[in-house]
Length: 88
Image (cartoon, rainbow, N blue to C red; front, side):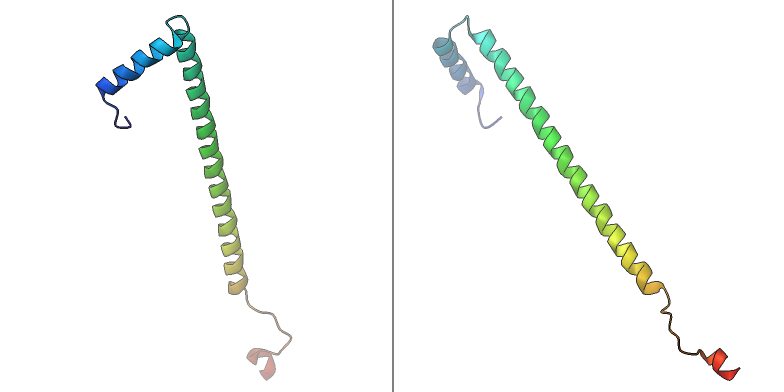
């Protein structure tokens, strides 16, 4: 966890307890937890939006490729006589 061991974590907790005080510590922990939950929700929403945009772009690209493939497969219609009609 970020290279923080148990001794470092204990020192951070003691300093936080001294600076904030025992009465405000639960309120601080609660607001920190809410902030982290909000951040996680926002990052998941951002990730989901990026994935949806990537899928949409992929589908659009497939449609373009398929449309280009169909155009090249269709025969070209001209007014010139074909060999069968030329003999008749």
